Amino acid sequence: MYAIGKYSDSDKMSDLICNNYPMLLVMNRFGITLGFGDQSIREVCENKGVDVSTFLSVINLLSRDDGIIYNGRIKDISLTSLIDYLKKSHNYFLDFKLPLIREKLKKAGATDNNDICIAIMKYYDQYVQEVYNHMHYEEEVVFPYIKSLLEEGTNPRFNIEKFSKKHDNIDNKLTELKDIIIKYYPGDGSNNMIEVLFDIFSCAEDLSSHSIVENNLLIPAVRQIENNK
Amino acid sequence: MKKRLRILIALPSDILRIGFATILKNYMSIDVLVFEVSDMFNLKEQLIINKPDLLIIEPSSIGMFKLDKIRRQAQNSNLKIAALLTGMVDHRILLPYDVAISVFDTTKVIEKKILSLKIKNTEKDDNQRQELSSREKEIVICIVKGMSNQQIADELFLSKYTIMAHRRNIASKLQIHSTAGLTIYAIVNKLVDINEVKNL
Image 1 (tube, rainbow over the protein chains, first blue to last red):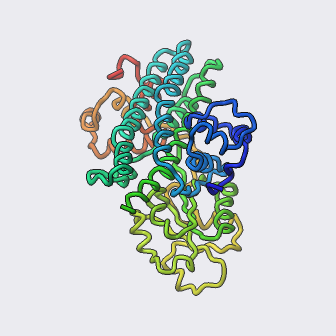
Image 2 (cartoon, each protein chain N blue to C red):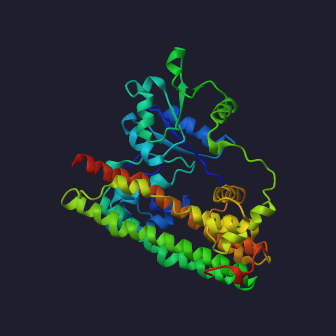
Image 3 (cartoon, each protein chain N blue to C red):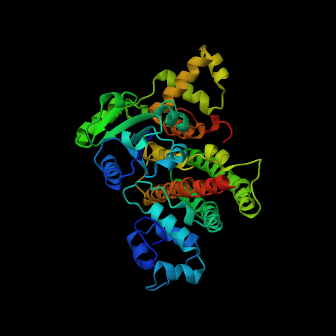
C-alpha cells in the first residue's frame, strides 16, 4: 500500500479507468498510454517509468466520489514527477482544451446573433489570457524555485507561502461564463451550444481538480522540504 | 454562483470524521465543500491551505491548542469553531466555541446549528427574480461603455460611493463579476448596441 485511499498499486489500471473515467486525463498527463491490458497500476507505472506513489496520490486525491478532499500522503510524493504532471496539464489546457472550446463556441455562435457571439468571444479570450498568466507564473517562477530547492537549497527571495497566498481559483470565471450562457443565451435549439456547455462544465471541473492537486499535494510537499532545511 | 461554505473537519477518529463529512456532504441543503484533517499537528497547515469558514473539532482532542491561537493561525478572525461532543462536558469548556454539536444530534438539528452561525455563504437565496432597477440598468450601460466610477458618477449626478454600492448590488443580483460578463448581459438584453461597447 503506497497511499491512503480507494486505490492501491495492486489494483488493475483498467478497473481504475473504467470506474472513474476522468482519470483518463490524469493517466495521459503522467505519460501512460492506452493498451495496458490487465496489468496492475504498479506494473503499468513501472513499465512507463512513472513514480507509482505520486500517481496514486493524485488519483486517490481526485477520486473521492463524495467530494471530500483528503489530506494527501505528502512524504511519498516525488516533486519532480508531480511538476512534470502539472506542466503536462498546463499544456493540455492551453494548447488543446481551451482552443478547442473556443472553436466550438465560435461555431455555436456563428449562426446566432452576431453581437452576442462577439461579446462571448471577447469574454472567453480575456479568460484564456488570465489562465495563461496564471500558468505561466507557475512555470516561470514557482516550478524553477522548487527545482532549485531540490537541488541546492533555499532561495531566500521566494517561498511557497507567497505562492499559496496568491494562488486563486482559475475555474471561477469559466463557471461564470457557463452561468451567463445558461441564463441569458437566446438559444436557437441547435446542439452546438449544448455541446460546448458540456465541454465547459468538464473543463471547469478539470481546472478545479488541477488546483486541488496544487493546493493539497504540491504546496504541502514543498512546505515540508522548506521546513526541513 | 453562490460561494460554497468551506468546512474543515479536524477529528482524529476516522469514524467520526468521515461520518460527519458524509452527513455534511450528502444530507444537508447547504452547499458545502468539506476538508478533513486527522492529525492535529497538520491543523495549522490545513487552515492556511483550505481557508475554512467553519472548523469542527472535538474539545478533548485539542488540549494544548488554544482556540484563539487557532483563529490566529487561520488568519481569519471570522472563523467559526464548532465543538463536536461525544460525551458529557462541563459547559464552561464550551464557552469559547461558536456552537456545540452533539454526536446524538439529528441531521436537521446539525443543519439548524450551522445555519444559526449566520456565515455569509449559508444565507438562503430568496427566490425572487433578481431584476435590475432602471438606475442599475443605466449604470450597467455606462460600465460596458468603459466608463470609470468617477465618470459614471459625473454623468448621473451621483457620488462615486453610490455608484460603487450599485455595482455591488448588480454583481450580487446577476452573479456577474466582470465587465466582459456584463457586456454579454447588456447585449443579450439589448441595453447597448455592439458598436457602443468600447474595446471590442
